Length: 157
Image (cartoon, rainbow, N blue to C red; front, side, top):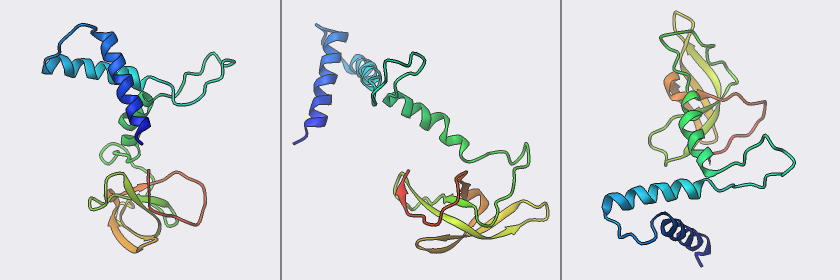
């Protein structure tokens, strides 16, 4: 019956009362207080952390925001003008960039054929997905560094 988000609403109210106990907020001060409350709430651990290990820090929601900001941009290697990267090869597992798919849904597949340019870099690739065979430019393909496997499905990443 909404217990999870009702509990988060209560936690947010508690944090706001501790930040400014007797304060009537205007728009800007409420926004600042909510941002601080968001940081405090997202700093709560998401997983159990053993007390035996002193050097490990608990995984929090703030870590996930950092992962999206810092790690996902390096999935697509933007080395076009600075250094050569290995070309896309037949058999590579890839994610296909498609603006028509819903947010956070990525079509995955395996490269079946490539079209190299005169400089040896692959410019287009034919990809087998569970929905059929697609031909895409290399700029709309992200090669995954994963082990061998046979099946690919569309799932949120």
